[in-house]
Image 1 (spheres, rainbow, N blue to C red):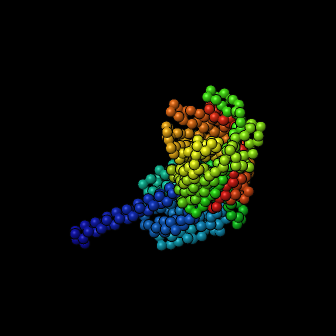
Image 2: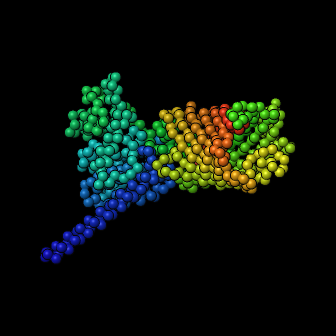
Image 3: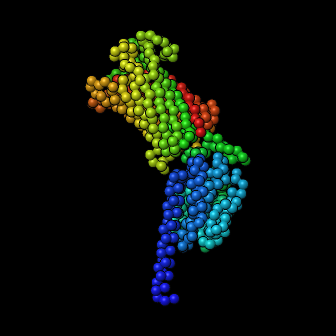
Amino acid sequence: MNIKGLVLFFFFLGYSCSVSSQTNDSIFKKIDSFLSEYISSGLVDYSLVKENLKDINRLINETGKIKSINENEKKALLINLYNLSAIKQIAENYPINSPQEITKFYDVKYIPYNNSTLSLNDIENDIIRKDYKDPRVHFVLVCRALGCPPIVNYAYTPDKIDGQLDLQTKSALNNTDFIKVDDNYKIVFVSEIFKWYDEDFKKSNKSVIHFINKYRNSPIDENYKLDYYPYNWKINDFKTVIGNNILIDEPSENVKTKKSTQDYTPSVLYKKGQWEYKFFNNLYSQTKGYNINGNKVKYSSRGSYFSSVNQILIGVNSRLNLGVDFWVKSVRIDDTASSPFKLLSFENSPNTRTTLTNMGPKIKFQPIKKLIHLSVQSTFLFPIAKDQEGKLNGKPYLSADSYILITQIFYDQAIGKKLQLFFQLAPWIYIKQKPITNRYSVSSPADIFLSFFPSKRLTIYFQEEFWPNYGSKGIDSWFRQEGIGAKFQIIKGKLEMEISHTRFSMGKSVGAGATYNFGLRFIHL
């Protein structure tokens, strides 16, 4: 071959490698995008993956056709291919409780690779373990069970693969839920992964504990006894896991997972096609109030106010819901000895009135993809009835003659297996229809709820709320209320009943009454 031929040969060889590298970079970006969409906090949204199975099938097929140009690239591709394929199998059979419910989960050959078809076992044992002899891979190959180390929501890439393997190994071996050291009895309890792949961890290491100590911040005494805790085969599905709280029954053969309304806190959005209808009825009654100095004073009459809030919310996608509200209100002014529940007769008299007061659209969205229990909901209410403040018709005050913008920020956090904290911050902006002065006014209620789950159908909660109302000189009035409530699933996963009671314990220029509340929520999944 002449000089010109050699030059052309190396030019096309370099060009071919460059094109191949760019193509391979593209697949890692696609894997990264997919994992960031469907995985959060080490948990997978299998219901959403199932809705979009064609996306993961296309991604697996593309990944399996890639020709690796070096060993790091091959290693990263195989790890990603294994994790994607395990997700695909769970999603195709979802809802299930465990990968063990799928026949030959590890042995069925369906994964395309280098013009052949492989199983999960083929990828792990015949290629990755055999070719690389790297025990760190056991902390990145995730079989979709909670007993595995957590799955990450990004792709393993050739340029970072060694650091990523180190990071995941260190993360697992410093996790007190994964490595459990009992100094009193000098025992180390470890995952059964260390038993199944004992030979991998002992190669080039004196013992399993010696291997673990290479990645530990606090080394374990190598004289401690090694023991194994049972492997947790429940799937790593964030819809059935709240923190460490498993809300599904123990795995049983051919049993499908049933959703619980406990999963659908106000922070959680509905998926495409899912919806809820909720109406919440609030009866507030007062015979006393707090004056401008915060002292409790008696009123000459009983004021009772009823609100029925009807809400419809529909899932557009996993991060956007749309809906509408209808508010019906009633008022009754009576003598102090009367029962507050007389209002529920909805009589028509000079001292009573009932009407549709407000209606309007609402939007709910998840602002940060990775924070699945943080959401924002905005509702804009139009006033429907005229003269709700009673300035012209001589009727009792019912509601403000204003447009109302309510923005609610929701967040919840699990505490162990039976408790959950829920937070709400909800600014209200009132825009008067016919202002003379002070067209705008603002309130900013803040709530905290502590929920206890005695069972999968019953929730008991405690509520604390602080509600300030702002004027030209700062806070014009405010109140604090505390209460207790309960929710019970009449039809599990579909129909929920709620009752609660609160009392206004402190305040300024507001009533000192109590509320009695009843609601129903129907969910269609």
